[in-house]
Image (cartoon, rainbow, N blue to C red; front, top):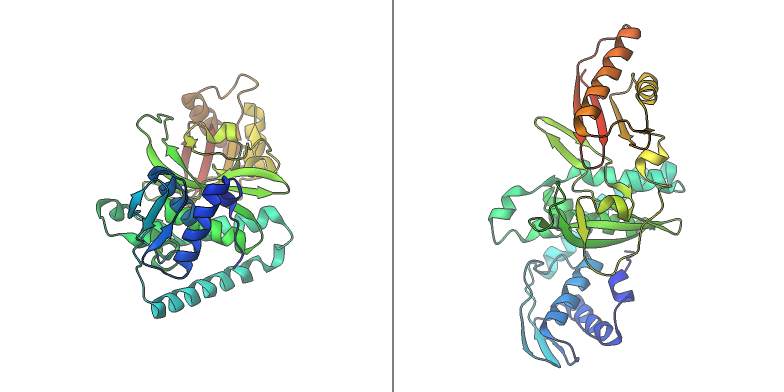
Amino acid sequence: MRNERYYYSIMTADEKSAYRIIYDGLKMRSYNISAAVPLSQIDMQEVYLKVLYDNPMFYYVNQTVVRMRGTFGYWELLPEYLYTSREISIINNDIRNIIRKIRNKTAGFINDEFRLEKCLHDSVVRSVAYDYNSLKKQDSFNAHSIVGAFLDKRAVCEGIAKAFKLLCNEFGIKCIVVLGKADERGNFDGGEYHAWNLVKIRNESYYVDVTWDNMYEGELQHISYDYFNVTTKDIMLDHQPMGDLPICTSTDLNYFHYTNSFVSTFGELETLIDKRLGSDKIIFKALKNKGQFMNLKELERKTYEALIKTMFRRMCTRPFALVFNEMHNIGKIFFAG
């Protein structure tokens, strides 16, 4: 399988040496990995975790703990392996079969990078539920790896981000797992640790958060694109990435930019709703550059007014639900039936 090892590429010489030792040891499933490198315990733990972020196929290692002993300059890592060789062979085959099915879905637009990435994004959102129960347990190892995402169909953000990375890399899209904090109100002091992704397409980098694009609003579950190919400026509203990462400035392949789903005025919102009234949903991002849609209440009120006005003019009545992302000024209209 193809793979992008971004974290290895930005390491120091000593870190790269430790990375190669750990990588080879995990590949051989060694129970004791010795590394004579001038690194601290914290540095060694960071390298170990980045080996796992770079290589989702090391799912057979316990992703939740780093056991080691030694002192500065000489360390022994003691990984815990979760599966036998036979079980690993079965899991590898199951994952290949899943990738093969996804490949069939992408055959029609393999040269269309936006649609290809969107298909991979949607495949993960549709098939993986967030595993809230695993947060209450200490032995939910699968939830942190691609096994939880691909086979159990339940995972936490780390497992989901690793699954998306594996798919992107397999289909020729550069992708890394990003670790940081996230909070829907932008309160990073109290924010929880979170994992998401960064992709590189057409020599431009974009953030993608597949976990947060799997949206639940009461009984309403839907694929969201709020965090599909966003800039550093936008992701920083409610995410705080850690580490040395590329700066994302392009909006070319951002979902709302690519699908012409921006509005700046009430009239533009009416026009957008009118054009897409026959769809099962209407998604848009409201810009504030013309002094409208300046807060959530205004966005909610104007969306409701534009929708009712358009349906009245078109003599069309459809049950609907409205959902909003306040931090990003995004509105969504979902139609029932």
